[in-house]
Image (cartoon, rainbow, N blue to C red; front, side):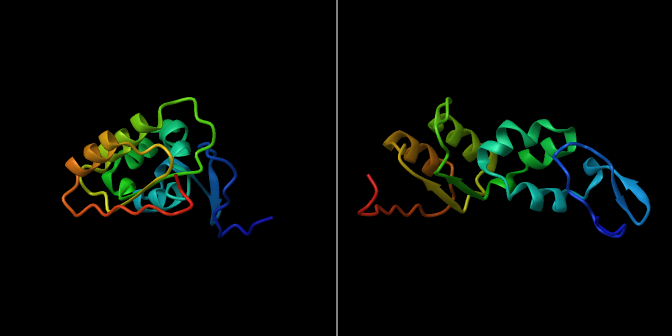
Length: 131
């Protein structure tokens, strides 16, 4: 059992946690801490689950700083359109995107969409083992 002076993560629910004998609500964490926690989730987990937990988590998930680095590979068999999802998170970055990894579904149209929304140089690489 954890000591009373440490935070205990049990689930993404808003279950109160005990810190120094006081109950705290996950929704009341500072946004920087919430952001640090949520950035450990996959893009799909953020869009499909985390942002739906509560208003404060949604606010953090919509913050452009959450979308400075976008990784879209190993997404599994998704039933939704990856290109639409990519456009959505690029839009959420509001021009602050600094790194993006897209595997297997990149199109000229998607590259143009991304490039039109960036204020920095877009560098493309093609690995010999990919495509």
